[in-house]
Image 1 (spheres, rainbow, N blue to C red):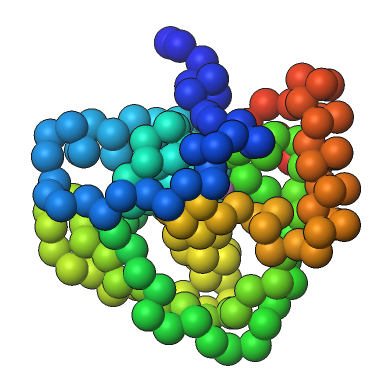
Image 2 (image 1 turned 30 degrees about the horizontal axis):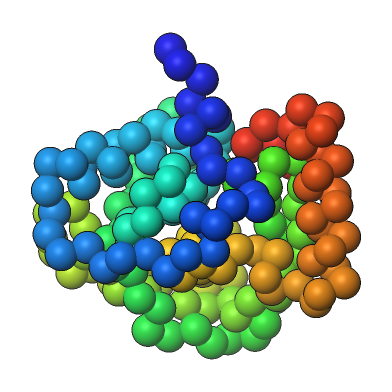
Length: 180
Ligand code: NI
């Protein structure tokens, strides 16, 4: 099997800074892309992946926060996801990203979100998460669709440090899915 980690777009890359296109309809190609993203995510042990991370600039996210302790994959496919509520206490948590191999950074985000998205059947779904990995993951992945990555939440100086750490980690051969 090809090394699926090679499919991941690594920062810095313009594709990770680009507003992604709204998806008009669920086509066979879109389903294929969704499957491919899930494969890359599971192969790299990520809990979420956004289409620009495999070089496709469309508003599609795959999330599975549950599978780590479980062989049963249960991915959520979110098409054109929108955060309709983001509130609750702000929480600072350590985040990693497949596109930033070898580093993690502390990001502060609201602890409660409600997200609306279409699934691959075209049905409008609503997801709610509070104080858990899913709440973080939803925000992190939806950011990707708008050209925003986790380091964009840092101060300019912390962002510079993180990008230096990333360059070092890459030079040392860090691969998508590896944290520090
Ligand atoms: Ni990410």
